[in-house]
Length: 288
Image (cartoon, rainbow, N blue to C red; front, side, top):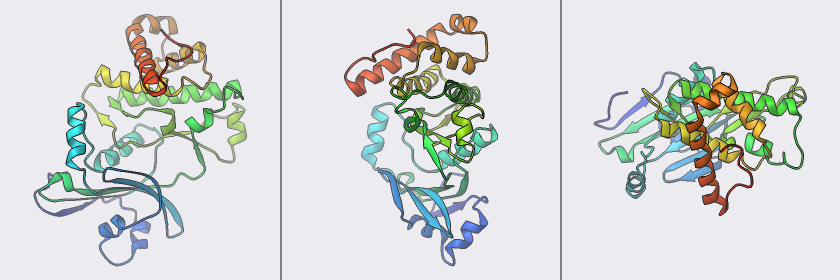
């Protein structure tokens, strides 16, 4: 997409026709930016909410510009601020090309002038329907352990998604269990009994990045975040080793020898984040 040098509106051609028609006459960009609904998150010029239009449910993420103080704080933390919806729109389509289920894209709009900090943009996705995050799913596993085959299937599917993502030199940057959503449909009973594979969707891609070569620090951040989010759900060392084997798709002994430094760095990062969040070290180290 060309850089902005004047006020302009860029609409992707995949703005779905039925949604476009539901807005009626007028400027569709301004109509989207004026939408409202059940707010999921609102922070620093970015608002995510669920809405209904034309009898269908959608999620909209509206970007209305980033305060300069927020950008300065990010830069001081050596982190790049997110200035609009375009990175998420691109990441969604890249994941679809990689055969990773994610939130189905419906519409994207972009408007900016000379000041890129005040650019406005949006991305709209289709509501997935009846789903549950893995954070919610695994919350009570310590008291009520899941069927072994179901747990193994989830571990393999999360590892598959992570492997494909990282093999394509992408990193999520918020790679936690809460950003995986599992479908709950007519096959739910068979899935929970391990007779069918679970279907997961990777969500919240607005911070995702793509590199010519994935930096080790980005890989450690993703895997460390995933490990951190799974520390209190009752996983065993054997479960973690299953993840490593599925992630690398190689003999476990060979993988542990070859990637020992990586997995120690992942465990160290997860433990550090756990201590920062909970004021204590994890009760049990799965690796290290």
